Length: 143
Image (cartoon, rainbow, N blue to C red; front, top):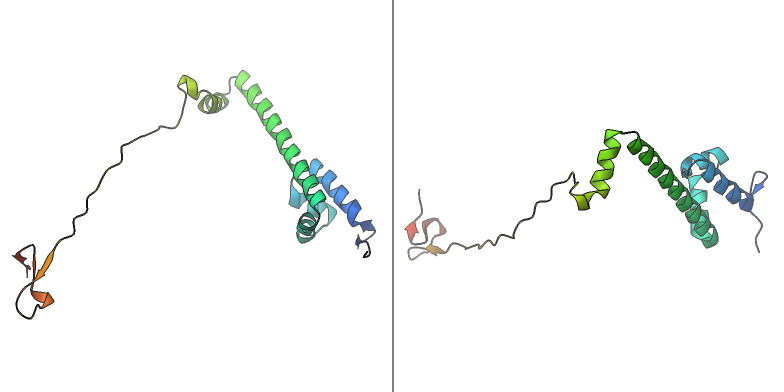
C-alpha cells in the first residue's frame, strides 16, 4: 500500500471529515467550505471521483442540507401567508391552488394546422431549352 497523503499536518481522512462538517456549517456551499479549509477544488473532485464511499457521504450531506433549507423556506412561506403577505399568497395559490382555478399562466391549446406545399412546374421553351426563356405554368416569364 502507498503512503497516506498528508496536507500539512492533516491527513486526507481528517480533511474529508472536516469538509463534511464545514459544508454543514456553510449550508452546502462547496467552494466557500473549500476556501475555509484551504482545499483546492480539483482535490475535492478527485476525492469524489476516486472514493465512492466519500462521494455517497458528500451527496447525502448536500441532500440533507437542501431538504433542511426547503423545510425552512416552507416555514417562512407559511409565516408570510399567515401574516397576509400578498406575494406569498399569490405564490402559494398559483402553485398549489390550480385545482381551484388559481393559475397565473394562461394555457393556450390549438389544433394542428395542415399545410400542403405544391411545387410549381417549370417548362422551358424553344428548341435550345434556354433556362432564361422558361415558362411558368404555361405563361411566359415576366421581363
